[in-house]
Amino acid sequence: MDKQNKWEEELLILRSIIEEFPLEETTKWGGPVFTYQQKNVISFAGFKDHFAIWFFNGSHLVDPAAVLKATQGEKTKNLRQWKFTDPSQIDKSLLRQYIQQAINIEEKGLKLIPGKKEYLSIPALIEEALKNDPQLKRNFENLSDAKKNEYYEYIHEAKQDKTKVNRLEKIKPIILSGKGLYDKYKK
Image (cartoon, rainbow, N blue to C red):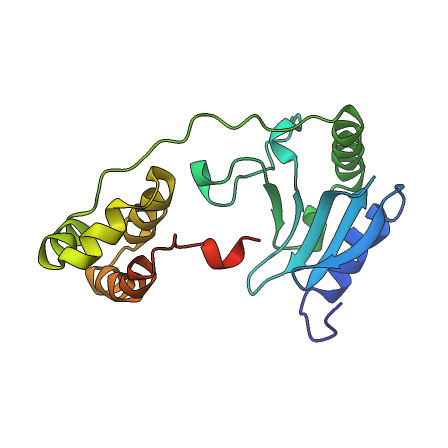
């Protein structure tokens, strides 16, 4: 753990509780991840204004205390986070119950069954760019609906017009190369 983390003592409390369970600690994404039968179960970290523990398969957890939140609203399908701003908020008994539940979920093999992907409408900015650039339009039309939707989401997610324009300029060369936005991350 980062010795400069202002939540060091609080994270040690979380770690001590997690270590009571038959979980294996690994490091993923630069932080501790606790696995059960090689499945990601729990992780934790300290941030500027809070520290948190999250459950990778958290959408299946029964949450009687209503402490678990999807970090990005509907965009987050399975991950659930429990935030703290003070060590007094750590209910050790309740946390143990949630951890045991998370392990039981992995033992049962419960998984989120994804629903049908909803496709967004084409953003006006992309539509305009396609009208003005025939090569861009040809390459874009050759992409699958899923790859087109990646670009739509990327533009729609930007809140400011300036960011949307910057993102459009960033994706044009990728589209011209005939690739999806996230192809470089896929094997």
